[in-house]
Image (tube, rainbow, N blue to C red; front, top):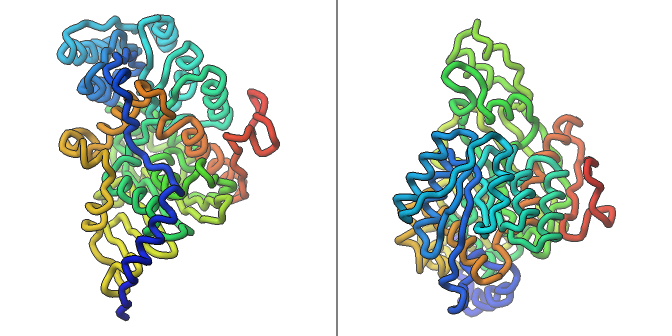
Length: 439
């Protein structure tokens, strides 16, 4: 069925009416007096990701790394070589054990730290850094328990320091262009979104001898969606979560852990101890999230199943005026297409490409995750220089990361509805819970 085109003046009227409905992720341009301010960074965790981000931070002007920390001295030495190559100076290393980062945080010549350790350590190290007077850039997820989420919120509110979650998927060219389209009213009123992290990570669960890495331990012991922020981050931005709307409830269910056991048997053999692991995390977890304004979100998590994945994330966004499907990069916009059918989204993505992609796209494309890592690191540095609020702040981090414990609780309770805390207002009961409480 063919549909007549909507008059362009009507389309522009809708876009203008929605222009202020959602803040745009972007680079906050520092004023001239602050633009060249030097930022001194410490790095906690110098594995592959930490070393990569260290080099990327140093690729931006006005940055130094005086100190690095890791429990593995060899990893720390590798990071030192990156800093020496990038800046010609040798950072001090902190390698005396798992708590040596606390000694590093005592330094007065660090403005901020990068927290690039395994996920279970992010919250405690970020909180310690904030309490030590440092700004924080944290890898995802921000936290794994509700207590940790509240701890991060309290630390930011009580210290006034900047915390930014480095959720790079929000900065994908397509995702950031979609945010611009939403902001300008192309989608009309948003009602529904699908998102997911589908990434076969079973090879990352084990060391060569069959012992478990931290990822494997998490899958063995955890329940629910253990890694939600890549999927939920862009959706939360599009829906204005923590900026006019918020998550209010979640219900989740998981499949049995068949693919997890199948992989261990195939890799190590039926008689290997790994084959006897009882995996608590199901292969697939599906959760439904409702928002205060009545939008519905389906979020999937599966790091075990045999499924090809051209991209580890997938999205569908539905509004009253348009729909977008990440798989195949397809879109339908009422009044802008010739027929009631999907069409390639390339033209729309190019038309609504945000300014920071237009300005920095060539530099960004040579960096990780399609250029997104370039923008998260640059956004953090320019946020510190300008004094603006970070584009992905502690309230975003807490809301997105709370999906981990809430989905686990729902799965264990047979799909029971779990309520989200209201991190901005101090909890659904009117005040933050006491440390050690579950809500």
